[in-house]
Amino acid sequence: MSQNKKESTEFAQVVAIDGPSGSGKSTIARDLAAALHVLYIDTGAMYRALGFFADQQKIELVEGEKLTNFLNSVKMDYGFSQTCLIRINGVDLTVKIREHNVSKLASIISQLPSVRKYLLDFQRALALNKVCVMEGRDIGTVVFPNSFCKFFITASVDIRAQRRLKQLKEGGDHSISLEQIKDDVRKRDETDMNRVVSPLKKSEDATLLDTTELGLNDIIKILSNEVKFRAAHLGFALGPNI
Ligand code: DC
View (cartoon, rainbow, N blue to C red):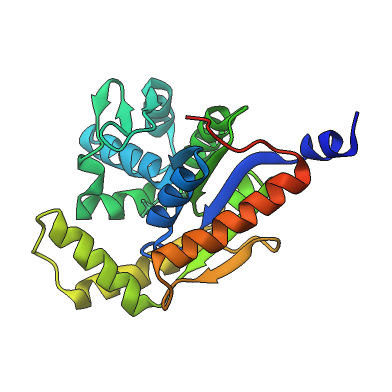
């Protein structure tokens, strides 16, 4: 076995992108995947879908038998497409999961160990034998600690809140002020960073990127160069993988 091949089997062929909400990581992850011609996987969408669906089924967002039964009854499908991204038990939740109140439900449900375990297994199975860009909070630390290339994306609270406001307005939601969003962003960071299971934190071997002052094109250039460099070193073939 060649040295390259031996090395490559020790790494997951997953580009791990983590960071707080509004850091721009979703746009970055999606564009990076497109630039590399590989699949894009949005794990936040999965927490959103589970939070929304559990709430609809009147499942209390706490550990217990009801939650266990709920998770056993759920069949999640990830669609790899912006028009049909995620379904639970056949119901398409692609649009619903972007509503403002779903962010809160996702943040609460993502603190529950049994939910994290359910999605950990789902995410690992989904990425099996695929080259992909996977985005979330714990991809580089927990889901794929052996990822060959990890990035931690961040930006100032102000700029993250402004981006979120723009996103909401574009989606037709004009009900929330910038101050409210800033407050939500701070609270969500606090919860995400301090939860007991898989808190949001930078993996030691991840490259830190602050996007406050950087344009998207520059960011994609920087990241894709690094991914290509590492992939070439390990003998990984990048896309087309879609
Ligand atoms: O990235 P997002 O805003 O769509 O994520 C929604 C929520 O899900 C957020 O509160 C953090 C949580 N999340 C998580 O805990 N782990 C992930 N890998 C992805 C998201």
